[in-house]
Image (tube, rainbow, N blue to C red):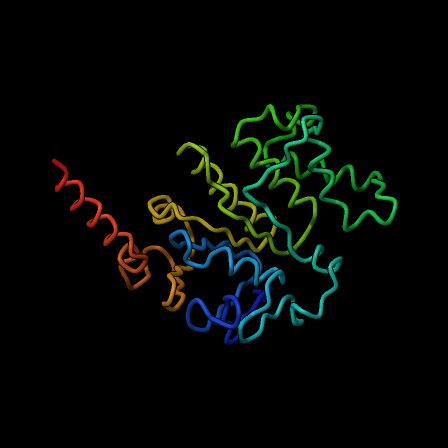
Length: 253
């Protein structure tokens, strides 16, 4: 399996202070990994470091065989794409325009789309199930439809790695499950390496393939939901928090 990303002795944090011990992980083509942790556990900091927007406290990141820091911005745009929780809010943006904008790293200075680009865009719209929405205003879509459109844009960017920040946030449960199945299918059928963050532990334990569990001050733990040799809720401090909440509730007159 082709190696896409590797970290060696990677410590992440701010102002020289690491959030948790060194991280040594590897991502291969076709991997889809859920990064799970409580709010403030360091998920966003890890994403910022893996995308080169934040310098490591220590250690190294190798992306497609080269140090991450050796790539120029346009080169990085051809290696990884981002699906963020923030969405475009321009009232005049159509679905097709948003998805087509993903071709910018490949379309040259004039940003012109040729016939091959158009065919590629239509293919990714079809794969994500939003081809029927191309003439709709983006703001008129449901949250689930908006998320699929942003994933289609990431596919159009045609990068080996896709990072997704809380892709199931604000979705109802059926839509969350559908989106996780789409992520798994894209990893296999489109040969993408996908790393996505979430704090929806119950959903991930049922549907995720691989977990990276992060908790501030503790080592990152990686493995399948059924094979991780720890109590994930306890590791994240969620069980303790729940117990405290119940105790406070019991004391309420």
